[in-house]
Length: 64
Image (cartoon, rainbow, N blue to C red):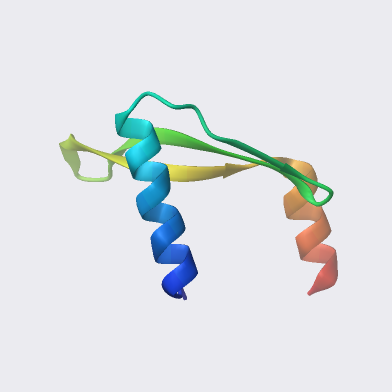
C-alpha cells in the first residue's frame, strides 16, 4: 500500500530522474537506489524501480 507520502516520494524520484539527478538513500537499515527497466510485455515503456541492497532485505525479513 502506498500512502500519500509514498506517492509524493515516487513523484519526486521521477522528477529527479527526468532532471538527471541520481538517487541513493543510505540508512542504518540499508541502501536504496532507483533503476529503470522495461515494463514486462511493453518494450517501449520504461519504468522506475527501487533497488534494495540484500542486507536490507535480510534485516526486514528477520523482523517478520
